[in-house]
Image (cartoon, rainbow, N blue to C red; front, top):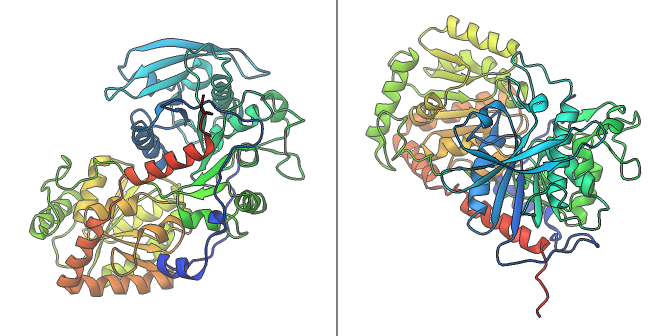
Length: 517
């Protein structure tokens, strides 16, 4: 499965952009589902949230965090259930599961059982049980060596088909959703399977990263039961794109920031789908809603920290910096500590950080990196740590406790992402008084106010990154300014209440009121 890379261009910071232009994504509201879709709405609408990750059980990226937090925020307003494949980590979670439904085979998609888990807070998780498809060691998408599973088309088409069967009351469940909320390409085919069905329900498809489209050979179509009548070819070679089908067929599309919703309608960031996305946007069916972060990201109560602290308690925060240096084997010094907490891939601009690292060290700064990704980038980082022993520290892998201590102890977070649909790390950093230094793209525009809650640079190249780093060094030397910016960043409200209300409003526009008796 290929990753479709966007071209690169920058966008002005948030305030300039909002004054200059209104995104086509907001010219019209998605008021009603297409004709033929009818919902009888009760007091609590039933929402099926379909995902491949959930931090409670399995996480490969930010989707896991969103899938753990957003359904819980929505559950205050709706009857929400999460649908998740039955990975080993789900089945071994120590929760009692009962079988509540079954689906039949469909072409090469096998029959599945549907289990239900109740989490401690009452959230219901429906589990697609099929040992051959999901009980494998590795990530949701790859084996233990990082290679994509060769049958990912079958694995995720099955998940999508089960979601559609639940919506059509073909899965023997006592519960039927009023709306499906689908996430990224692995779930997008549910919109295809519902297309044209008389009893279909509305679908929301959230695009977390357009570069990952679920593109498979044309021969996959017959195996996954892709109707030739409903199918839209992805390209001239007749390849199948799960995300393309979902974008074309979903009732409404959302992305994870307002700026990204605009960017993906343009050729430079549209990954070949910009024309279709522009069409959906002009129909009023593309909306940007910025992600939130969960309540555990609180430096006053985080058990991972050596010294919890609040706004203004900068001496306590400094204790975290001191202890972090000891933990990572960095020298004690007076210069700024820059953190990188990221997947080590080109999209995240980690190569730019590696190129700028000698200048950071020469100016009296230090660099701490944690993450995993491209083996070539990992090797470059390891060489930097050896070359600048005591001034560069690298942890290849991921440990959440260490990441939290890095947010609490570093002075600046480096995020020179070439593109960033939303980003969560910059919001985690702000909550802990760590100022993000970021490329002005996507959700970074929407969540960082340049010179107030972080620093932005316009073009994703090492020259502009170095210029922004010089600003960071000057701010670090001005303690009153540094602490004022830290305080402003920590005051930002980035929880899920606001995004949750936006999704609730979107759902309610898609679920027309039941006619009065």
